[in-house]
Length: 150
Image (cartoon, rainbow, N blue to C red; front, side, top):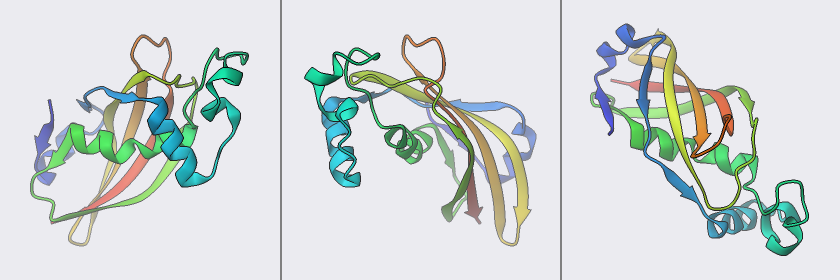
């Protein structure tokens, strides 16, 4: 369920997990489309037969594909109802501790790490843990920084 907050409500949520996104499937088709978009055709991502012989036993998503899902995961989990505009400002500490096999279902867990006032808005830093259904460790951990204007 999407969490809807006003910007003024964020201050009381610093240090708390605020929302969890719905699950999203990472299909082989999505992986292939990402490979085409980025021209990264490494066999571990796009050759299911060869990838069966890899330590992963099949194709896995690009780490940057997992990272690129952040806007969608965020939008499905969180809404700042009084934000007129939001922009990505950057990332900190991005890591991919575990692979994402094709066919996996992922979701994001969002903890508000920092909140800073800006002229006309706020800057949020979210600690995001992306987990794989049935996985024993995260597939991505990152801090994402956004600016939201009133």
